[in-house]
Image (tube, rainbow, N blue to C red; front, side):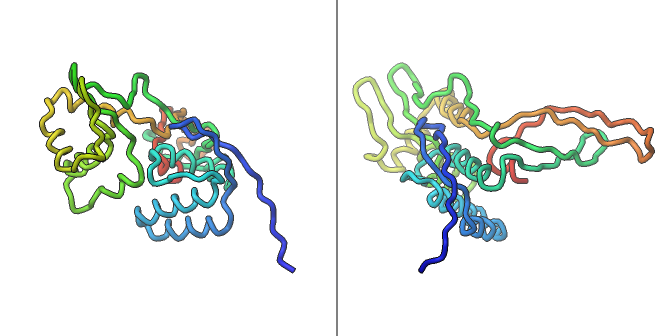
Length: 244
């Protein structure tokens, strides 16, 4: 006779880039173990692999995780974390005025993907020529190399994110062309056309949460000491910001 198994609840979330609804379960001890080992390693690649494996384990639907936009992956993981460890995370920030720590509780259920108005994947570069872009993914992130310059990695990322190029007569799938041809295309662009592609990356949807930070620490140890009172707007952006 087998050992008893505890039934875990199921939840639903909507993938930001596709609006597709998927169901998932919270972390089990095995996922917690995967995450802790990756965090102890302090290795970015191992952490990325851990997140991929945890999402694959916990989401019921079959997902091509490596090809998903990174903001989708960050959002899904945040939802898994909130249902597994609690929807409130305790963070701390230094006050700019008194330099003491300000404890803050962030409600993860309130954290959403923020989109820039006017952002689009279809980018006209001239009257006749344009590009269709995809979002950076885990697969693309793996092409970033530590031994390359920032400029080289930027060009690698841009080239990897171009799905197709069109002119007034034809649509050219980048799958049918070499990286060398893509690099040559990018290098031939006028500066104002290249700026339009850069704007696409600058306005990519992002996991983001803004709130008011207020310091209630006392100026001194006496009971009559005044409160610091420093206030500021704080923005958390990207998955790592919620687990510092």
